[in-house]
Image (cartoon, rainbow, N blue to C red):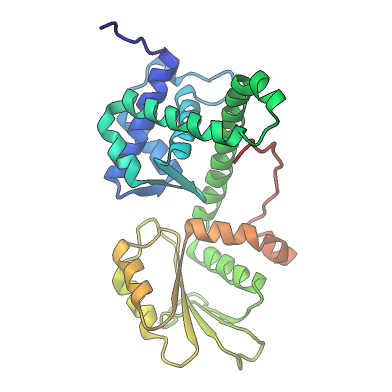
Length: 304
């Protein structure tokens, strides 16, 4: 049987996509996108061609190929990207058994099935002429958008991580104010009894809920005991707890919060960034200055 030759580019794409899904599988099924990319870089030995700048995007070739071919995996249902976090699906776990080339071939086959269905909405007189060009163009636009979003998220993440714990505490208070809450108490330096911020619906705190906020600004994940400590502070009817943790939460901590008889909302770094973006227009100019953002407009890929 004649061996099917695989192009150098496709071989690289298969290698990096397969390794990224393996990283996710071994990491519990979900990780920040930048952590996935960093892990792939540590685990795979890239040659000079794979590591050089890719002329079509201006980024490192293997990273561009990872973004490009991950689109096939997303449309195939093997991978999900949500607000900077990557998730491997059960279907993606199963497809790892096919090996790098087999996985990418299956992802591309499913991508083309999705594309064919999406193109049914196009007028027939344009479909035949533009089908192959559109497929490549759509992938290129989506890859570029994916890279730009990842770059933007990485920049915001680094800006937040550079803050001191008290500076991040001020960011959390500003976010609550943008949502319409009053924050008469933001803990000064020193002991605070576990409450870093108190927030109310009205200036005097006479309306429910009364929100007690705890802040952990660190790289390590927040464990169950820390979440339970906040739960112990919610002693009155109408008390609600919010826990901000830039290092995220352990699976057990998340499960404990979900099953608790008191309401404790967990906000990790990704969710904080999403909320900051969502309520940015409602921040005061003074609060915006603590973490200023600017919108960037980009041509959206078709059929997404």
